[in-house]
Length: 221
Image 1 (spheres, rainbow, N blue to C red):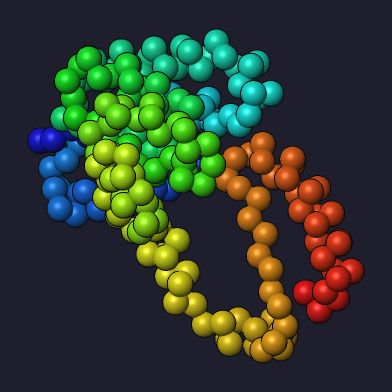
Image 2 (cartoon, rainbow, N blue to C red):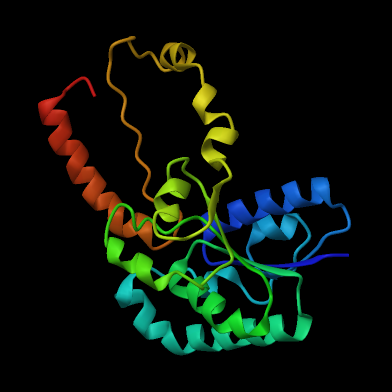
């Protein structure tokens, strides 16, 4: 029975991890899972090594007060990997934590996969020079990413985006507008403040001010 060790670092990674577990189990019913995850991955049968909330931090202001806890969780995760000797390690997004797992686990000789490509193609592209040797395979959410990473000698594969796979790309716009009393030409804006608990309190005031300004320019929004 193959043992797959998964490490997610936040709620969005928990969702991706759960979908990955379900897809793997559909092909390999005997697969077993261990690692770090949240409620969604628990629904798929994985008992997390510790609460996912311990890792869900954003920015230096949140990291500094919890640096000791994060270091302890890093050591605990690596010790658990060394003890279990899984067939593969799959880290999911959250590069601040998961990339440290990948780097430290290299000496164990266990295949390493990282799920969700770092968006170095969008900003701070110089970071790509640190990635060779960090993972054995990179799983990408966006179709253009494998070619970009291939230019830098990194093997990557496009595996699809969960938002589109969930049916978001095939919605009935006309029905939605009719249901909510919106005209066919009325512009619609969606707000997405993020999945971390700390994001919404910080970002919603900014979003609110943005909406206020947009409403002045575009009253029908």
